[in-house]
Length: 497
Image (cartoon, rainbow, N blue to C red; front, side, top):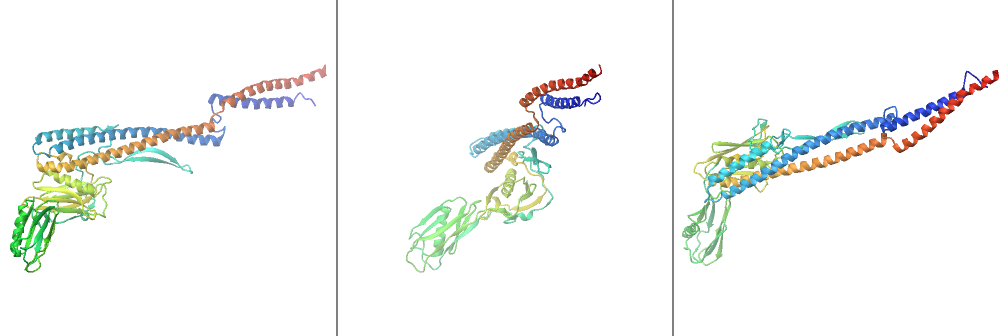
């Protein structure tokens, strides 16, 4: 049945042409935008995923900038600490030269002061965008990554860089809580009294036929048979005289009845005294001798092997009428505390007082103090938490080689400062390497994310180009089909002629 009111063929042709035009429009949009999914209506799920990934890419770009800034900051700090190490090495050369007494120590001290001022200049200038990693103690965080969990939550990750304070600051003594129990003194005062070992001799013995060998501070004394009087008291006096004749520094001997007292005023040095019969001659009774060990002349403060050292823990040590302090920094131990207190004491240049840091057989760190004057020096230690750490070059400003004592103390202290500087450079070098690795990873990760996004939403241009040509042909054919269908009712006019 034909109708002039309803043209089914035209409607079919029109719907077909509309479908072709829709596909053609979509293909043209793909070609013009380069995307197969340009909006949520194209593919809501894929579009949502791509937008989340695009936001991550934008975040990682900001992270790359943060890492670049952090890397530059650490590079400046590393270069600064390495320069400080070189300058400290030069100071060490000056200190070594000052060990010789036949030099102009005042001129050497002038050179040391100039190098010290240069170190301060380097430390103050080693900043990038206002951030100086060689001053202060607060950690610095660098944004390094964004971690997205399966539930969609995002957490920022940081690389924490520890500052390395290369100043000469003494720090601030805190009031957070007492730490007195972490240190024990060996005696309340240090004196110049000699320590003694006693060589005992058997009584009622004839020593005129005996040969004896003594070892005192590594020096041998051999007494042949027949060189001593027979009586033990007289023999003891003769042996004491022979020991004194050795001329050993800080070593003297005296006889009292059948005993010989061997005295030592050597600081920080134990002295072994051995006595043996090398020839067992004949005589009334059995002759014998026994030796001993002379303790070092020094009092000490011994730190705990079980307690921990936290940043801001401060210790004050009294020597004589003066008090010295050191405040520990992050990651330091009682070794650092002991060395810091030694540096502070040495810097004061107390007449007759010398110090040494060592470990005992239990592994505990000690600050030893020797007093070579006739006036007793008080020894005390207190501690408090909650302070601000001393600088890593604490004591550098107190180095003074103008005296023998100052030159001797400076040699040990400059070694400690050089090691602190080397440790700081190594720490910055490690941090810089980590930042470089993370920056390279973020760059590669960003490229991978971009590739993934492109796979999801980018149009296949070869496919789109072929489809466009096909759709254009279909559009032309559809238009012609619609034209033919629209002309069909015209044939009905011939029925009315």
